[in-house]
Amino acid sequence: MSYRLHILMFALLLMPFATADAGGPPEPEFEALIQMHKDMYRCAVKSQEKVLESSAVNVQNKTNAEKLADIRAKVDKRLNDASDWVSLSVAFLSLSTEIYKLAGEYKEFLTECGTLVKRNPAAAFKYYKAQRYINSEIQRAQKEIAASGLLGAGIGKATMEQKSLTIYSLKSTVGNIRSTISSTLFQCRWLLGDKITFMNIYEVLSDEEVKKAAASAVAWWNHKYQ
Image 1 (cartoon, one colour):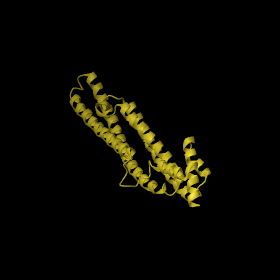
Image 2: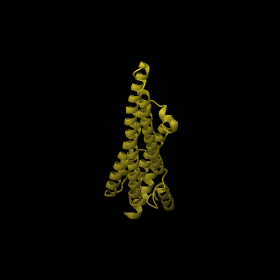
Image 3: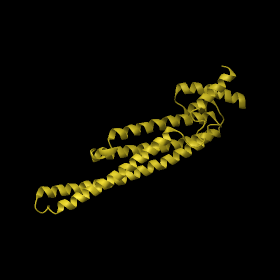
Image 4: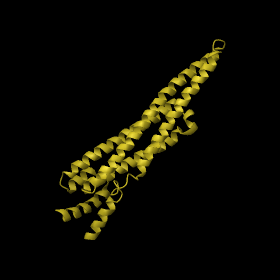
């Protein structure tokens, strides 16, 4: 393989993230996180509205509760619903805050890795692998939110169990992405202090096609700088 082809291959491999620190993060993942934060905040607001709605019905029904047993049963149900909506509102608000913080961490991740990947091809491939995982997790979360029916009027139709399971799953996704960011930064920093070899490329990659491309990129890197 010619010297120019080595350079071209290496440039193509780094292209998806070579500009990560230029003019802020343009990545769709960052925009998706911000949108998810807004969606969850809207869910929190709607949950609070449901609390007020249930409370208002309670006041209206209590005047007749002493006369009709079925009205009393409805009052009790409304009280339980109001309590559930309070808990749900707090959970949505907490999730919204966590996603907002994650967006900030992701922005810092892009900025730092945008510098690290230019200094070491192994770090660049590790960053590429992390980006693919983060992208897949965000897409999965977006599909889950859409399927749950939480947005718009659907929040009142989904059962409390469905809403709770969705929140739990989204919290798990946030934790997975945060863990990936942390471990990727650690490994990229570690790789910068180690000699570039085929072995540490293989330690951080699993995709066979990427490994083959990495071998050529590392060979070019070693030929030029060693």
